[in-house]
Image (cartoon, rainbow, N blue to C red; front, side, top):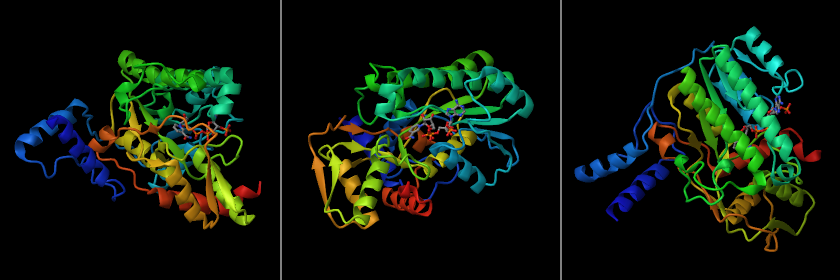
Length: 369
Ligand code: NDP
């Protein structure tokens, strides 16, 4: 009981510090306001899942290959690399370099000789795309990962970061989801081919580290949103779909907006620029085989999410929950202890992130198409 109580203190301290300014390098959180013998126990709990903060900072002119730079994640990493002053970033569009083509990938690496690599290229999609194109999801992702990770080893890339996803954790996971729950029980059937391919990618990173001594790391982002997201109502995720629905309802003076399900399930959302900040932080300050969760460490109900978006858009009609539609799993939240222990916290609140996303949509006439 005492252990549980202490762990909850650990969690409360961590959550309380979220959305604060980014902490100083290597700052250890979790140690305040606890008496000495309790501190020892807390420290044991923290050590049980401790990861080490390292300094592997990249030179500002290091040659960095960003694979998938046009996507939601890739474009955010591009913005963040530029904001942090990195000047030598190589990119190639899908049509110029198909990463499923082993020969093309190998000769690209032989010519360019990148020092660092962010692998944000992948075949990604929602539940319907995963249902209709399972072969493409497993083939494309396995080929991209095998070709890129092997070429990175062969051509001496100093460090590589691979993007996994929170949706590859087992279907029935204890909450919040810790990194060690991966591969502990059955996967979600609807995206199994995608999940198997992603698990192969992060296992490749670990295997290459073990056999060849490479420095390849992986992270597990939660649900992301922001500029360059998919706002197509047929294929988009819940947050961008609601942004579009409320925007259009306001414009067309509709009396209500229908939200699928009861509105009660809890979900976690991370603004994609925070993820970009996290992956550069990991590249520079994490070294190891363990995957690293990246989220906010907090969640909201779909109902609260709908109200936040309604407010951001300035819509004054009603929200109607369509309870005939499925709710899905009641809660999905990542455990952020490891990232917090090396000093990284998300910086953008949900309100702020939704506001920025909406501004970007308006500036780019996203809803006119
Ligand atoms: P997007 O679909 O927005 O972007 C994927 C990128 O990969 C695109 O630039 C695409 O190029 C490129 N790509 C796809 N196939 C190929 C190929 N054969 N050769 C070269 N390039 C290719 O995906 P996201 O940015 O959302 O996802 C990026 C990563 O982040 C993925 O690994 C995903 O699993 C992970 N992730 C995403 C989450 C999310 O909520 N979106 C959540 C958790 C993890 P093009 O546009 O030209 O086709």
